[in-house]
Length: 387
View (tube, rainbow, N blue to C red):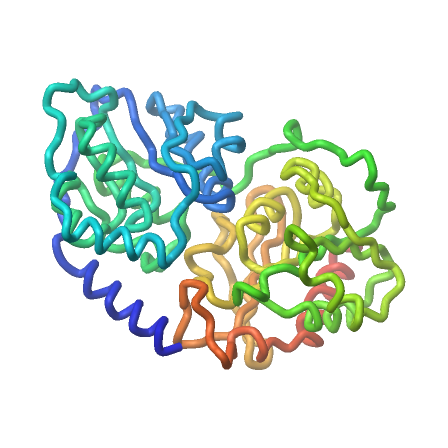
C-alpha cells in the first residue's frame, strides 16, 4: 500500500505542471499517426475509437508485437516496439530521458509524413513519442499528460490516462474534442463475429458460462479457491467452462476446491478469435480485469472483478451510465450497452487503488470479496434473463 501511495503522490505532482494547450485547427488536416503501441486489452478497448477516427482521417496506428496482429486487420499499422515496458521498465526510461537531451533535436531536413500525432498511452508511451518527434514525422502533437515533456506537445491533456477518472474511450474523446474541436462518437459495441473461429475440439452444449480463473498472481482478482467457492454457490444447471492463463498455473488449486461436476476445462492454447467465439456463445463471461478480459467481454454479458486497477478507467465502455449499489463491503456497478449487453463490475472500495500491479500483503481489495453474495448477483441475472 505504501509503495502505491508514494507512486500516486509523485505521479500527481509530476503531472500537475507544464500543461500545454494550444488549440489545433483540424480543417485541411488529413493524416494521423496514433500511438497504441502497448498490449492487447488496450488495443481492443481503443478499436471502436480508432475506427471512428479512420472515417475522419487517414489513420496509421503505431503498434507493438503484442497487439499488431489484432489491429492490422482493421487499420494501417506500423510496429514500433517489440514489447511494451513494464511499470518498472517505463520508470527507468523516464529517468533515462531526464538525463539525456538528444531527443530535443528534431530532424528538420525531413518533411513530416503525417499531419497529427495522437498519443493514447501517456507517460508509458513517452519513448515512442520522443522517437516520433525526433524523426519529425508529424506537424502537430497531441496527447495525454506526460509531465515536463508536455512542453514538447502542441496540446496536452490535463491528466494521465490512469488518473483521468474517465473511461479510456471517454478520455480520448474529450482530448480530441478539446484539442481539435472534433466531436467523435465512438460506439460501445462492435460486431467482431466475422473474425471469430469455432475451435474444432470444443463441443460444449448450451447453456454454459465461461469463467477465467487467472489474474490472482498479478493482484487483479480472486484466487482459484475463491472462484471455486463462487461456482459452487451458483444456482446454475448448465456447464461451467474454465479457462486459465498460459501454462494453466491456477487449475490444480481450483480442482482441489471445486465441488460441481458440470465443469469443462480449456486445457490448450486457443487463439484470441477462438476464445472470443466461445465467449460469444456463453451466457455470461466472468473474470478479473485484464487484457484477455477486455477482449472476451466484448460479445457477451460479463461480470468483471476489479482489484488493483481503476474501475472508472478500465470498465467496459457503455454509452449508458453505470448504476452503483452496495453489496456488503463491495460495490457492484452495472450498465447495459446499446447492444443490450449487461456489463457488471465488482470491487471492494480501497484508498490505495490503483497500485499499478505492485500489490501488498493485505490485498483487502481481493480477500474481502464475498463470493456467496456475488454468486447471488450472477444467479439473479441468469434467472431474470430467463437464461
